[in-house]
Length: 324
Image (tube, rainbow, N blue to C red; front, side, top):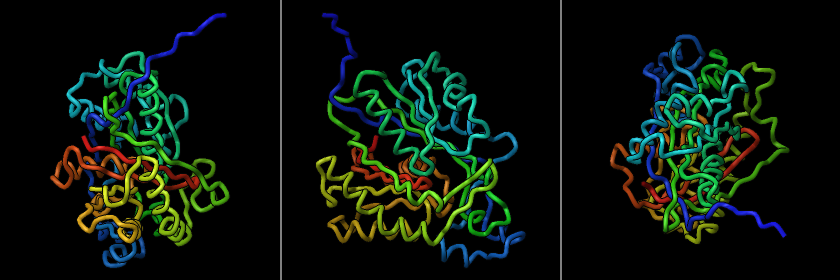
């Protein structure tokens, strides 16, 4: 009988470094009011956004992913040659072929990397982190670079008040490597395929969404998913130091935090609010929020962070991580 040899697995994985990138162009609510029937007070009240970043002509999904990924590798104290896998979560690439991951890997200098794109919309980074962690843990990858990168300004109708005030452009990245002690918990993920019509984009036109329906779904369904991720990691709400949900809408973020506190999360739990000055950047929002919070001293190495992404699909995913 022939016996196949398989890669040697490792006890656990952890995030070794994070990084992010945003375009230079800042767009305020007052800027938007020049061509949309809206105003600063209306936008702040409904979604909590003060400003966001829009890409310039030279900014692409690939270029932003390269910048964020390079920063994450440097933060991990590694060289590109120390990695062998690149996963780029995105839903805004202008063409399905070639994928972004192969281009990002080559530009950064991760030669002959396993590379693929992943589309779970705003839940994409958590999906990618789960896949990257499992690849490393199983021994299929030594270290993986997981990136969420979006250029949403390409697919947003600038005159549609329901979307133009929300979405923005950015990239966020994390390096995943082996660890003797688990630093990334099991991913809890799923889809509500019967609700796909809530957020759509057909034939490469503009993105549309049923804002109120999405709001009701997110404020009722996401907190239980976050609790499931905690249970899967063997933790309780009071163990969470940092909550980093997808930055979809400040009211949604606050509703999730409130429900978790009712279940035992601490009052001093730090809650990401990166949407205020970054907008909704889809798959980039969670890693970028983590990077911004680290830079601002709001989170620290060793903190227990609960991540939960959600968006078109309707897709959702969450996991507990130890901050690098």
